[in-house]
Image 1 (cartoon, each protein chain N blue to C red):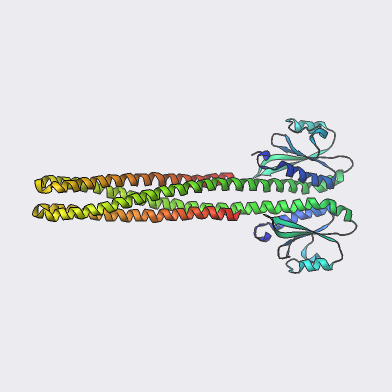
Image 2 (image 1 turned 90 degrees about the horizontal axis):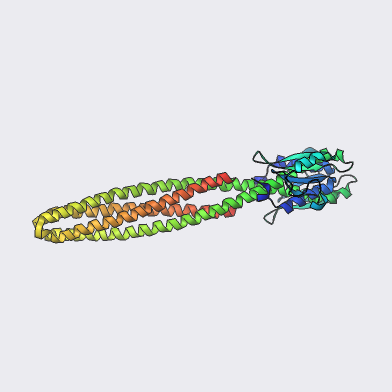
Length: 217
Length: 217
């Protein structure tokens, strides 16, 4: 995960500039490739660490000023570094201000990440919910279809028993057939009714997911 | 939404103490009821603003020290206040350090909130997914049931056509019934097959929701 992908870099820059205003120290934030993605110094005034440079870390080692690196972590993975450079006689200040900068940058990155992750989950979720609701409609169309078929099966069963009665003795075995057709169409209606009820429950649950998610965030 | 509900207060305390170490200013964080929920000063040393006091704001007005209040906001709603109290001759420092404290507390609260909201959404989501997968199993049990019924309907159709043939001239109308039974059982199988396929799609989509969500956060 690259910081650039989810972090508002101008807000990050404003955050480190506020810290810098208080401490007088220069801050660069680098991503995991060592590129500077935010700095308290504008790109043209920052020749040692040009924005977008891949050899930022080597450049820091070359300079004479003392630097301190703070890891930027996300779920225990280091995804960047906050580099503080001493400028003038403020070395004493540096150590006292370091925990604050650590929290400042890490909390900012974390809040941006969680915001991004939330949006991604919710957008994926709402896609999935929309698809599921469409599919539930398809199931409902099939269960309605089955209901029509079952109605006709019942009519066929009635017709069969009428024909059986008309045939008299010759229709005796056909009465059994007619009863069986009726019995099976009843069983079929019962199974179909259960599918309808359960699919309605699915639709309700999935709709609730969507509502609750947007309320929560 | 109360800060106490989602914020780790000992981490919040540590955050404001880091800022306080740098600026020498006292900081209290109050929730929307005016209760102090985090302070750079321990409760026993903080007589003006005892932790848990409901009249925190009145106490601030009574004291002679200059205070500055910064809103803590969540989705444009004020959910608390960061109160900074001047202590000694550091008034000049105070204004310069204020934007930093604002960002520090607001970003911390925001990152805690998004983390909390994520966990809540994901837990609700995984409950909903588990329920949906159980319901899909119920539908599958009903469609299997329907398949058995449709097999028997086909056998009944065959029996009916055998009986119709045996009845000779008297069985002519039975042949029509037998054909109708066969036709309806085929149509029923088709509808049922469609339900099976669509419900499988629902299961796949819902399972993917669960996987993707846990990967994203």
